[in-house]
Length: 476
Image (tube, rainbow, N blue to C red; front, side):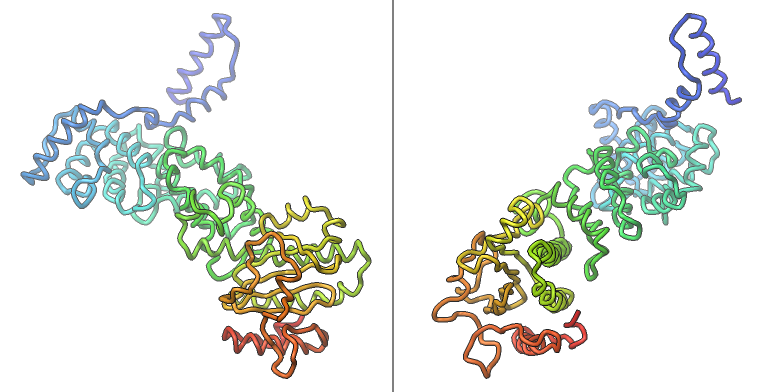
């Protein structure tokens, strides 16, 4: 039995003799363990005391460039300054300070504990190299086999917390390899990240590392991210965009399966809004290329959603013709989406679809990417697409597909909430002539099964936007 366990057992017996309500020894031991063994709640010294220490250190190693000489109490305070910026670097990168701190930490486990505290609290995921020197001090201190630091020595052997080739990503790899059934945030105690440590910069770095690896695992409930953000809210403040970037970074060129993409996209929209229209908050801070990933997913969501709604509508109305027509159009436009040339999409629903499915259901499906189609036959609806260089109106029930140059003042503006027939089929016609041998603009969907209209429209788009797609990719 360890000395701590013996003392706890004695305390338990003493309280029982005083007729105090009983508690389990296991629960008390767990509570003590959760406090950590590194003075996690210890506050830094008073600011005036630290300021005097700064001045003394500055005089010796910055101005005089001599080995640092501090008193015992000053070395106890020195770790609190280790990761502060001094000139062009971090104080702990100065050889005189680093060597002095190492000697002090090897002689006093309390100084070693404070070094660990500062490392985990003030670790900067944006500049992990800044913690390298202090990590080296901690590793050498742990090698001195101080009994009070034995727990951290074991954790570092297991998770490489302070190693030069370790850090937050290494800890995440170690925790994930344990295949624990517990939520990851409940596994942080295995790495000693409890209390204040669970809310410091190192913990935030682990959250970023987890987000960067989340794509390789089945989607875990977004509460994992949210709870972790709450846990290290101080470090997260002003850096939420980094979380978004790490979640999106693996998908610069490919799209995840809908089982992964849909809940992540819903979570991003719920907390940060629509990336296409945000002028404040997180989205303007996100790297433009990564923000475009979320926009791409929203566009795909609108396109896929439109075809799903059409299927539902056709089923309810018993419209077999629509069931036969739209798989060909879906395959065609998704082929262009997967080539990266579809920039935006909007669903325009007719009166009958609205009455059949309900506006609230449709709006919950499309969000702000829904509009009403007016002055058309009541059964007709349409998918509007903005391609790179071209705007497309793809209507149902024998409506021709129509295209405009995206710079044309007559092109439908996808921000609109209503599209009237006179906006689309103007007199005189304003849309492009696709078939050079026809007097009509647009293109009808004749010969879907043979790829007739698909090849004509593909050849037109090849000339117009410089993208050509093989016949095999245009068909369902």
